[in-house]
Image (cartoon, rainbow, N blue to C red; front, side, top):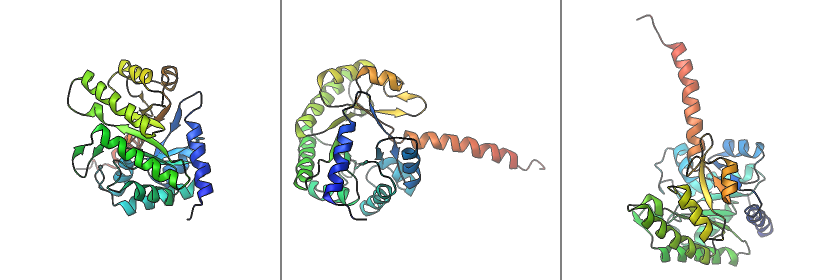
Length: 266
């Protein structure tokens, strides 16, 4: 399916505007047409495609192991099946140069990206400057195509070794550089405490994304939607946790039937 620049630009602007409402933007993390249609039918204004759940659904390990062409085929099928704007997790860039990445994203009909600083293919952690430079190059490449691609700049600072204060300082350094590079939202995954979240919210002006489990709440502290809104969170996504929650429910359902079908004649 072809996508005109005007269509992509309009959807990108809509996605950007959704980040600046009074309440946090919730983007359900989807992995196929079925999950995307469910989320749209539930009334959500935008979606994000998660690399981890897509990898799980296709039988690949998470961490830039899904073939790039296959991944974007999945993204394209999702964008063709829903009318709301779609962002896509591209991990550290899927090994692509910024201009090529932007082209693949737009060709698939997506208008946002999530880009992290862990390069799985090389098993390394980008420096703050390198990650910001990559984000900046993605921004420039998208602007050259007259589309304001909505960039969610992710840092994995809190997943690395070190004490919490040092990791918070590293995260803040990275987030400030990502702001300057043109990120539209900031995603410090696995924030360890509500105090750390509040400090981040106090020190950056760009909307902050947190991860939530659909049953137990947002990280950190199992926050409810209302808690996240009061704190000033701008965006909420589920990562692999929506798929995981559905898997737990499915196991329970199947377990009931397995129990019923057990052969107790032995």
